[in-house]
Length: 98
Image (cartoon, rainbow, N blue to C red):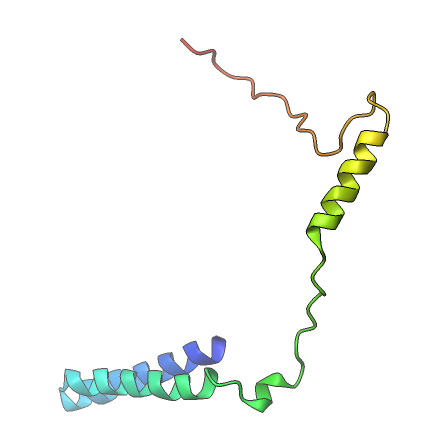
């Protein structure tokens, strides 16, 4: 993403200078569009140089089994223990509704 943005800004600056010197706004637009094309060709395909250090993702867990295990263990625990997920925040102190 950073490479994409740097290339577009670079071609934008070059295009602005060329368009200013030639007094042609279309030259600026063509330069920016060419920069977008170049940056897209360099960054969109999965080039091997970008895949040298792939991200290791975690294996997906089966959430239904974990939920069932959590429900079974919480029902078997004593009723006097508080649930760790319970919201115990107090309402903010402020003006009362009028």
